[in-house]
Image 1 (cartoon, rainbow, N blue to C red):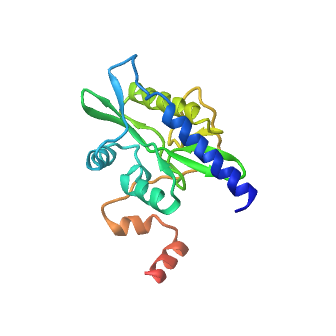
Image 2 (cartoon, helix red, strand yellow):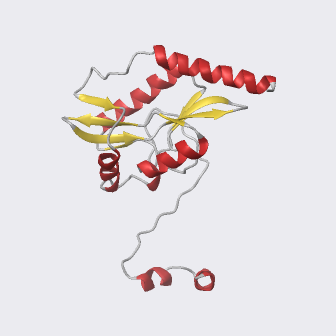
Image 3 (cartoon, rainbow, N blue to C red):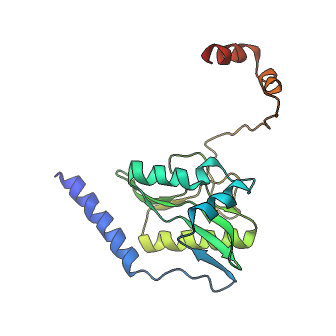
Length: 187
């Protein structure tokens, strides 16, 4: 085993040791609390009925990331009076040259905090920040569709969105002629 690999494995072991000795996060300032193990069906039902949520918020994507890349999930939900009011897909990601990070929805464009209100959003954000400190990661990255005030932002990407009409022909008519031809040839 190379010296770099052994050193990296030791740093991962140290992160997990920190996690094991860290206190469980509890939000004491509100009635909103963190649920680290919500049922997948309940999580997905919340995501499917929450407009800003993306495909990358779904538990199926979380399973893909865990199984394919062996990233450890710290995904959690915010609850108020027993009901999910927000979700945060969150993973510990090993970047060999850059150290470790907590990333919401790695390998996805979006998948940050998805919440009903600022109370749930703030509880999920505080949980993620506290966990990042406990794990001593280099950084916390939230891939938000909308910016969160007081957090640094990088404007590396541009997103274009368009409503999809129920009529497929109207959708095709909205695409420029040459691209329509390419789509039809590929079909």
